[in-house]
Image (cartoon, rainbow, N blue to C red):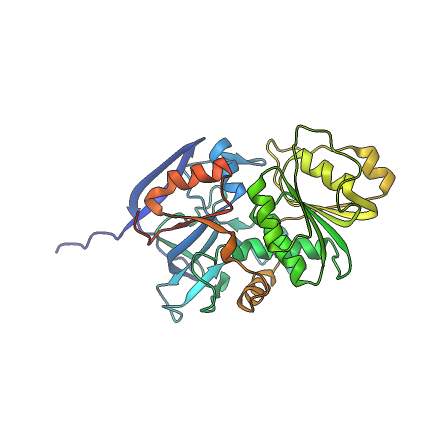
Length: 345
């Protein structure tokens, strides 16, 4: 008897720093509680850039060739929900430990996270993922926009950590996709005074278009002034993963204010002027991923039109154009770069 050949799957794998390869592999087999997903869109993130340049992120290194991509959407191919358009929560917490039992799944130390070694991510045509982590997409959100929902979920978590309220003056330091989603989420929450800075003119222009009331291009080589346009701010969000952005956030924060650190530094270390933060009595908070419920809240905001996603998508590539997509990510010449595995080159 002749056996049918295993289904082929086009896959993008990182083999080492700067070493991206595309190959055909057997399609994955769903495990318990998983369904097959036809991947429709994958957003490339700053953390993917860390992997590309260093083959590591923080203290996690590359154990074997890795499929990147944790901001992803697709269509379910198996099970009762077959045919449903969905966006994924990339973090599969154990749901057994004390941290998960306390409702802080995003801090679970045993999380399987898509695109974080050794768990393969979504830069492929099909993948298996836990069904309970797949959320239905309303028709009003396009496939290419859907990867930004995970970014918006992080922004919502960051706003809660910052204890943001309407009437505050808020600063956003670094206006890549995360910073832009924070600006938009601030507007949706009723904040009307939003300061935004970045080293790149096109990102500053995007922040202004998303609702920033003061938007400024900064030169990281220049000393950071104690007084900047729009300062002091009640809450400062650092979104660049660079010490200059951390320093700018701390100097802009008002006495007794809060600074939320979101960016991932490379190398794995953050420094700032302790005397400034200490004299002001600042509260520094670290933001990690998003909490349970944030992705569903992000979907509701986007579906209602309260947070626009489309303007942040600057580049769209086919899977076989992954090298070009990563080059745009590396150059920081765009905003959100999206890879669409079903797209023709």
